[in-house]
Image 1 (cartoon, rainbow, N blue to C red):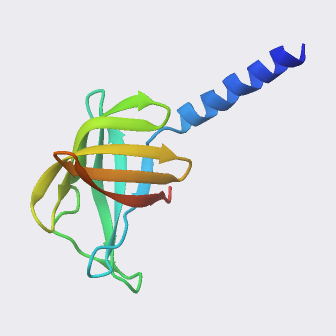
Image 2 (cartoon, rainbow, N blue to C red):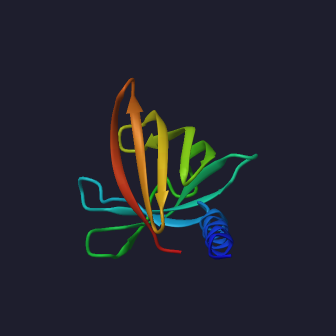
Amino acid sequence: MKALATAALLVLAGTTVQAQGIGGIFQTQANDDGNVGMVEFYDCGGKYCGRLVKSFDRAGKEIGSPYAGKNIVAGMTDDGGGKFSGGTIWDPGADKTYKSRMQLDGKLLDVSGCVAMFCKTQRWVRVK
């Protein structure tokens, strides 16, 4: 009976994590100028995309951005277990697009941009 109860709890815990998903708004890691962005993830044709919705300077003051409304992340596939792959991430400062993968762990999202086998990872934080 204890084994059955434990199994049921594990299934429910997995369902809660799955239900949380990638939807929502994440604050990016600060760029070289200390600015951060708010990226909203949404379903884009059965995959996941993330568009820049707001930007803030290092003092926390909202600033205008010519990139607001544009996709930063595109075409990510949910691989399960908080892993996402097969998409791209756009670096607006360099105007370059990289292959990307992401790992969601609670409120933390590790976002990697890769060239060949070399990847750079940023940690984004869910704010909504």
